[in-house]
Amino acid sequence: MLEFINVSYETLDGKEIIKGISLQIDDRFVAITGPNGGGKSTMAKLIAGIYMPTSGRILLDGEDITNLSITERAHRGISFAFQQPVRFKGITVKELISIASGKNISVSEACQYLSEVGLCAKDYINREVDGSLSGGELKRIEIAMINARGTKLSIFDEPEAGIDLWSFNNLIQVFRSMYERTKGSIVIISHQERILDIADKIIVVSGGEIAAYGAKNQILPELLGAQAGCRFTKEACK
Amino acid sequence: MMDAIQKTLLEQVAGLHEVPQGAYSLRINGSLHGKNDSENISIVKKEDKPGIDIYIKPGTKNESMHIPVLLSQSGLKEVVYNDFHVGADCDVTIVAGCGIHNSGSGESEHSGIHTFYVAEGARIKYVEKHYGQGDGNGKNVMNPTTVVVMAKDSYMEMETAQIKGVDSTKRDTRATLADGATLIVREKIMTHGEQFAETNFTVDLNGENCATHVISRSVAKDKSRQSFLSHVNGNNKCSGHTECDAIIMDDAQVIALPQIEANHVDASLIHEAAIGKIAGEQLIKLMTLGLTEKEAEEHIVNGFLK
Ligand SMILES: Nc1ncnc2c1ncn2[C@@H]1O[C@H](COP(=O)(O)OP(=O)(O)OP(=O)(O)O)[C@@H](O)[C@H]1O
Ligand SMILES: [Mg+2]
Image (cartoon, rainbow over all chains, first blue to last red; front, side):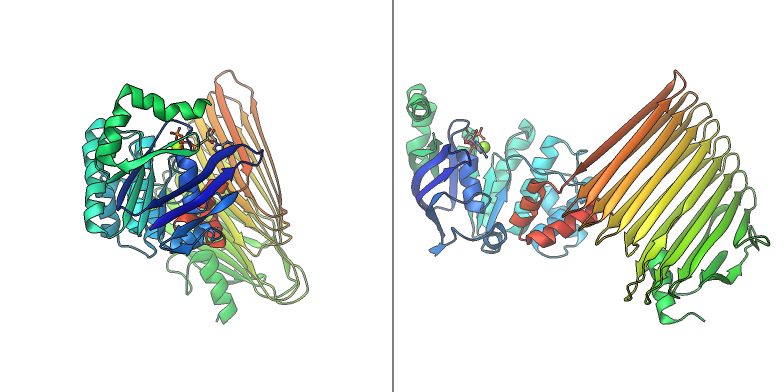
């Protein structure tokens, strides 16, 4: 499905953030976790085409997408929910969901996507996606957009951040039903045990490298043990 | 009869396909083409200079009137004086607009001087659209002046838009507010090519508890230039707020000079001005949804000016 071949990413000032990662993602539900600053969001941006690797190649279903633009990758079926959603003056929730779904959707369709993420649709549909929305509301709209796209690879960067506890269960439901409804693959970057717990595989990224990659029931116990936590993070301190 | 070009202009500035219902005055190529009074609104042609006096009876509610101006003859220059006498306790909408089609090489120019006398307790919404087109190299120039005199507890909302085709514009708006009066101004401007647009607002907050919000949103593309000047003078217990928010693109230039002056200890005045290019993350977000960079830019600009 998705493959990294020796991918590195350096910032303009020469700091190496991703250090020659090679990995293959074939499962339909994969979680990426690891310490803050480990390189998770950077990996997601490399997949979406927001960052271009300094070296290495990225393949999607065997096609080399390394040199494709963000737009081209979006057309190939990559969707990316940002860790920090973007605000727009004057663009409404309905317009954004329409853009995401690639067609002019009806109010009732837009409402469905919004209800799924726990927003009362009629209160939000015509609101501008600007500074007046709360952080949690924005995060939910971000998820609704990815849902509306319904592409073959959906990447969510810490979707649970800012979402209240009550809604947390519903959020898990959103991913479950997405998993069941679509034929696509879901990659979730998360620090939450309960999200890691619904993944098929877990990838631990630390210090710009893959510290561990395996089945959930193999990785999760290690992660939760105090010792393991050290093992995965000490890389960063070298 | 109007020809096809004039009809397009009318549609652009007034959203109308034909001569409107109700009270209207339509000016085409420098002379009054037609007018109609309603029971409550009478329009009287000025004798001493070009223009009209509009009298709206006190207590007129939920009525709207149109006063479009169309110029399709290249090289025509005119100054027109329109005075609006809005009676007490009215609630009316006035839609004005100027459309120029210049297919020659002469400079076409329309300068409308609109004066509003808004009587006590009246509410008025004033909408003004400016639009230019043409295939010649003659310039389209519009220099609107709006003077607003607001009596006690009156309320006025003024919406102006200039989105396309005006090569040069100097907009001058001056208002004085009595006790409890409120003036809200929303301006939208987009300039491209080598266009120039200057807007200048002066609001004197003279009455107790009067208030104003002046909100300008603009986009400057290509080599166009814009300047936004506002002077809000708080001369009593009052509140004033000006906001200029501009997107700058290409080789354009934008100047914002908001000035607030408090001459009373209970005057509360705020100004905000922000100029910047389209945020990269906004473009990126829309591109991850499948839009090209160009399409993303259009969505952002259209939304911003909506
Ligand atoms: N454009 C950049 N310029 C310089 N440093 C950067 C840039 N982008 C990311 N970094 C650095 O790269 C490292 C990895 O960042 P990244 O955002 O990928 O971490 P993360 O794993 O997503 O962390 P978190 O869990 O806090 O979201 C961090 O140290 C960060 O400061
Ligand atoms: Mg991150």
